[in-house]
Image (cartoon, rainbow, N blue to C red; front, side, top):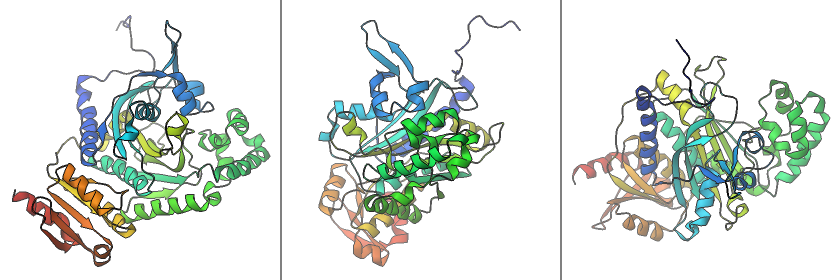
Length: 429
């Protein structure tokens, strides 16, 4: 067969009609879970200022140094095809004054991105990602919630053998001491590092821990662990994140050398993998990840506002759906508000939220807030028919209060019966 004169650029790919059902399946799952957790969709421009990424992601990262597509306009503006989604969302958050909206601001996207890297199975130079971001909330429960959202979405798609790696990389208080300790260790093992990592040791030593070269693995495995250097505040934050994850029984493991490939991360970082053999080399497949970025908003010109989020590669998920996924789709109907008071109640509420999601009942919540008055006011604003209230007394007694928001009547039920009770009340409407 004669080779066509024009072909798609290297590393790009067409999504043909018979493949659209897989991409639509992912999009529908993202839209459903975003609606359930009250995330608003945002679309940012494909082109952004190149400085947005060099300043936000970090000059010493592979993305900025090697993978970004740069261009200059006729007017001399230095632009880049966006390589990732968080920096543009932070830019939009600042530019549009979202700090003045009720916090946290919860946003999601499903968009194409661009990186000039070596094409391989499931990795393209133009690729699709979806992501969820929560800005304006520092409570560790949202760290666990973001991880829960991604895990629940993958479960909704029928994927199996999913694992989660998690770590804390500290903050500006405790990271400098760790950095000095790591540099000393890397310099003493310099002869065993690749050329890139020798350079990174001087410029950005934490990036060494993200190296994928086999030559560097023994050195990385023996490197000091950040978790041993955490300040009391970061240690307490991470402890609570793990307690929340234990409460909802997610299959995570601690990976003490996980740092992620972007400089803006602080404290909690995480990655998701599939152990399914969908690649020729039979290695586990990285699906996505994320973490906290508590300094990024200020760094890009905004106020001192915290954030957390993550992003997943659609093409890699489609690979797995083709192998093991479920193409069926279901929609959710009822809207409930979930209110809680105190740490134990938060833990139970996190578990209850997942039970509601599994039964396709829509809820809203304010996990980062403790004022019952404010939570009930929010429930009224969104038009919730019922509010499930778990206070400290209810958490200790394994009960919950179900309040009819229209009549004000409420009743106490056993915690394990809450979802069934709401289902019955919904049928009576």
